[in-house]
Length: 225
Image (cartoon, rainbow, N blue to C red):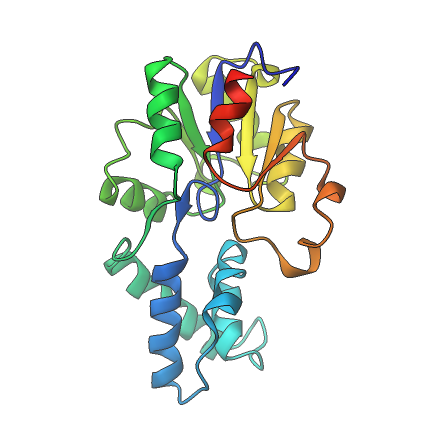
């Protein structure tokens, strides 16, 4: 593929792109549904909301709670407590992703993560999956003033890597990922295997990513083309 000959680093979004965290979210939400005497939420419905954060998770089983509700805060805190305590029970790298990382490492192309997941949870997750020493850079909302879709975290990651943004690929499964990567001047890859927002999943071309992949292994094909 033209335009990728000078790629010197690859950055990933975390949930829904590099790592499949949905099984742990599904487990916790179903526990909370039972305890709240709420009809269980379908796995697929939980999965597509993972990238939207903890408040979105609570709204799945308590949509009536408003933003300032103490009950929403209580459920959100309980959700986060359970997630932090058992952060990678069923979580894994996406199928084919470890081979992608191994190939990048063999070619001495650094890879890293730019995520909107809080640093404490991101670090715990990488530690649990034995990825910490392999990851060249981790940028979280704690590290910047503005999170994705603003390009600030992308620029920070590029600076830490010592690589110009135009020589970096950013891979993500949400419009804010593609917007942030494009705004920073990076090549963007839409991970269509991830947790795509249902309202936007039908028109992936509108996201204006440089490339769309249906499986993690396609990244290797892009990088060697």
